[in-house]
Image (cartoon, rainbow, N blue to C red; front, side, top):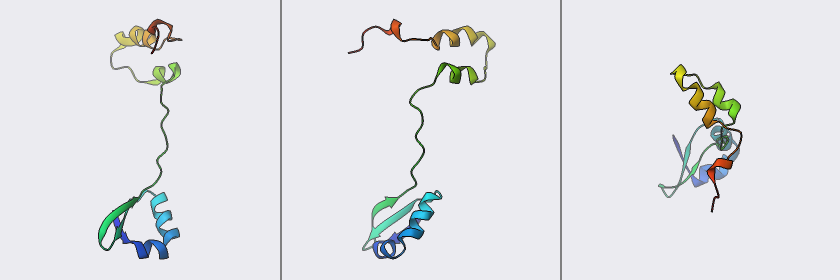
Length: 83
């Protein structure tokens, strides 16, 4: 993890942003005190798994296939009312 001062950030912004985009975390200091971090934006994960996604997982126990199919139902109707 690199550390750069505010002055270096001002003078080399494009270079530092390119380094962050490439995956590097950069600590920004002000008067030698760590004050901020320049980090790459990570891709967001989907908030759910689809039924097709569940079927793609390898099975450690073939007997779990029926349970997995039941868990990957087509609806959430059986969950009842959500407050």
